[in-house]
Length: 277
Picture (cartoon, rainbow, N blue to C red):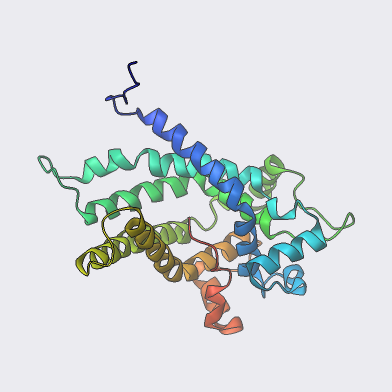
């Protein structure tokens, strides 16, 4: 019996886009409550409604939300979240190989870590720019606290949120926080790529592990941890600035200064329990 052989034809860009976006959506369905908990922890101390809830830790935040707002509350903003994954992951991953080839010198068979970082930062910036409106709406839903039928709901649905933000804050309001979001993405790309290679190299050089799955897992875990620590301050500023009403902060830098003066430097690490994405 003749077995099926893998196709030697590389996947088209459209297939890469669809595959990356679909895979990211499945992952988002599983991790979305963690992302919502991260947002609530990041705005705690700033948002009056969230401040009264007194969230403690990721699991404690999810349990408090379920108890006070209902079992569906950890999935607030899911529709916008899936829209974000389809647009962000599709561009970031779908274009990565093409951009990497663009940065690779002609005739070179080896792709350096600098080339990978450049490709990751470029596709990341493109993806953030495309997906920013969906990210703004997602965070607005996740940050909103509704404790009962009588509580005010600013947005009746996802499409209403896009329209309301554009009407009240202008079209630019949908791209609020794009710069810190691009900075966050660049920091994560650099931190993950560099630390992954360093950790893997040390594990192999000291003969602690061989070049197989455990080695890759430990390297990826360490890289994710380092990226979270480095990127968390920018991530918190990004979340607060994107969720803020017009006039609360003059700029992301103003948001950062107010956080330091009012809450101290530890505010930059609120909600850093969830892995970066």
